Length: 289
Image (cartoon, rainbow, N blue to C red; front, side, top):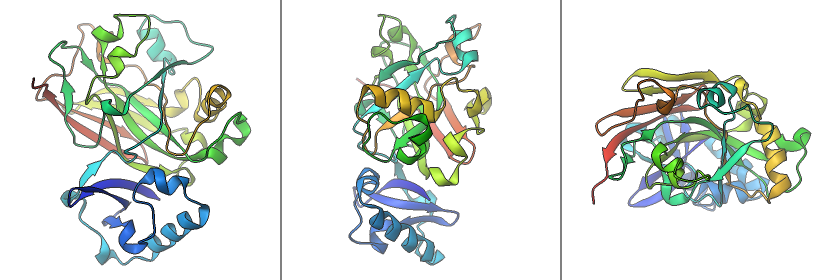
């Protein structure tokens, strides 16, 4: 299944993305939760009802994708946990040693936007950079999960552009400031359930394009800590809950490591694409104050 959240009559609606468009889930199953986080947290019988209803829906029930305003597929994550330096080539391009334990930081929900929403270039800095990232969507409340059991607590995967204000990322030893500017973290276009992807979402092509030019091109099997190991590490520290997001780090090719450096500017369009998950596309717009 591929789940999206879209806006209908001013309110978010949960939908299933198909080749023919979007199927509104609550039209098929009125008792279904209104958000993806709610559906993930529901019991298995509700998720099965939704999947069965979507599978049996006629093509005429689909809304054209072009007519739907997509929102972040998970609009209300409890936590957004991000890994840094999780591709060896990216660590090297930034002058870092290959980590034996993942770098971690948190994102705030106010930094997040959806597909086609503008990424905001702030007035205080020109150093807006891109980062294509596979992102885990947690499916069960869990703690102390072994790597061998991690598949059982992952609901699915999506894509993130972990837009970073590099100047502010380096103002302190912590990366929090540069990773939490409003409107810099894009998520989507959909959440693909784990059963439709390879184990740990490995072996997927991942790419960033800026105005059509390829800037990052790699594969998720190049991650130092894969999805299952990451769940094991994080669940040793904290309780993971349904709808939590874990962004898995970015490959090499970011703008700050280039010579000369390249920053996203107003009028640009940036695309992050992950094989079998989808295309996340956002224009760059200057902040208005």
